[in-house]
Image 1: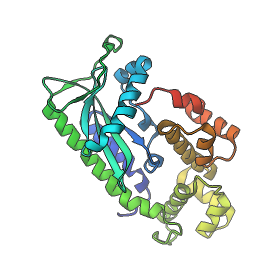
Image 2 (image 1 turned 90 degrees about the vertical axis):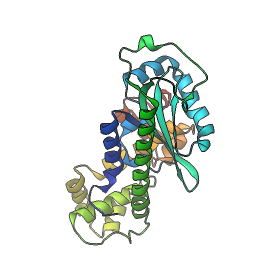
Image 3 (image 1 turned 90 degrees about the horizontal axis):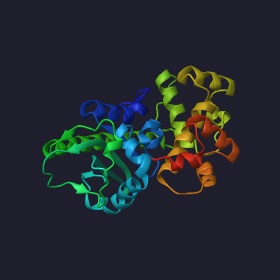
Image 4 (image 1 turned 135 degrees about the vertical axis):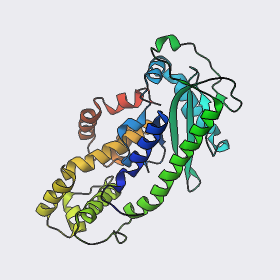
Length: 290
């Protein structure tokens, strides 16, 4: 992988390219918190009006289908599938396995099925609530559905390719795989790697300064110059992303979410989370998500 100062944005750019080409929105269930730090928080839930309308009254059915039945069955669909929810909306899902463990689920949606679909997986329930939806999504044929599924597989391949190169760099404990020059790109990569690798610990600006071989004051100014933000804001944003992922994809207690994300004080965590997401961690966990 060619190292550039913005290579951490590759997953988001790849997803945006898929969305532009297909007109579908992508949602990621990151079960291992290995991709989430590099994605926009918009990736937590479908943004389409039809899905929001359904989830407002039938979120329990959506969760049961996508987080219950799907995860039990997905091993039988390693190349993904297209499925129809209880409200009759079509979506695509492709699993991603890392070291034989289900790590990510890539969702794309939504459309309506046109004609006879031979390979469509349907929810066992059927609800007639489309009268709540002001604008129904377009229809697709099964042939078109197959093309979209293949495109989602290609997105998976792109993300896996990036992951294989980027994570080895970011997880490097001593930064030996990174160039040690003083260029802007190199400095930015070292800082980004440090924040990614250490954000769940008590890593301070002085720890970063030691990593860079600079004085603390110089490091403070350098971070501001390269990222346009303070060190505390950058590391707290990474911690909040991790916390959001844990709230979204696990049922661990809020205190454990706080500590696992790198925060040491529960009240401080609540204050920052509410400021960032306009709701408490518990409220966020209960928000209908796709």
